[in-house]
Length: 290
Image 1 (cartoon, helix red, strand yellow):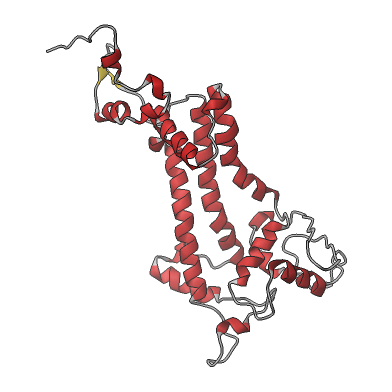
Image 2 (image 1 turned 45 degrees about the vertical axis):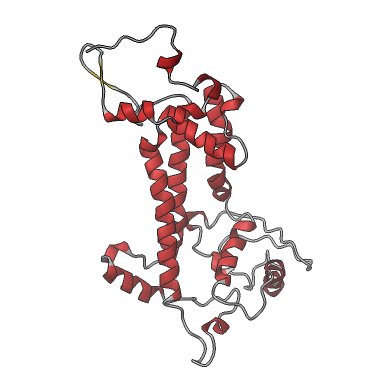
C-alpha cells in the first residue's frame, strides 16, 4: 500500500508476511512500502489484495481522507515491523517483570486493575520519588509532545488536502483507498509551519515526518521504562531522593525531606505497619532538643 511508504522510516525495507483475514482467498507475502497493485511477482493480484483490505476494514469505495489512518493501522496490523512489537512491550515488561525481580517479590509487581495500578503508582512515588527522576521527565515529554505533534500534524494535513472534486461535492469524495497520489500538499504545509515557527522546525519530507511522529513518544516511553528498571534495583542516583548532609554526616533538613517524609504516600504500602506515625508507636518517646 502506498500509505505504508515512508511510514516506518529506516525499517521500511524489512520483510513481513501479510496473512490477511477476509472473505477472499489470496494470501499475499509483501514487503513494507510496496505499492500494492503494481506488477510484483509476490502479489497475486493488486486488486484482490486491495479488496481484501477493504473487506477486513469495512471500507467502501466512497472513502474519506481519514481512511488514510486505517491504511496506517493496516501496515502495522500485518506485522510490518518487528520494532512495533517491542514498542508496547518495554513498559509492560518493566512494571510486570523487571520491577518485581529487582524488589525480590511478586507482590511488588503492578497488579491488574485500576485501583491496583494507582496503588502501584503511589507506592512507587513514595519509595523512589520517580516524579523527580529525569527519565520520568523524558517520558512525560514524549507522551505529551507526541500528542501535541499529532494534533499539529492532523491540523496541517486537514488544512492542506488536495481537492479532486468541485465545490459542490465533498473533498472526501476525491479520495480513493490505496491511491498513489498525495492526499495533502506537504509543500504548502511545510511552508506555512516554517513561517509560523522557524524554517527548520518543519518537515518537507514524508519519510522523515512519519518517522518522527511515532519515534518521539516511543523514545520517551523507553526512557520511562528504563527509569523503572533502574528504580527496581533501588539505584536512587538521579531522583533527588537523598538528603543533604554536612561534613559530619548530619542531615540538613530541606523542603525535599519534608515532601519525601510527610506526604503520607508511604501509608499506601504495608498499611498495617503505617497506620500511625512512627513516633506515636515507638516504645520510648523521642527526645526533643530546644
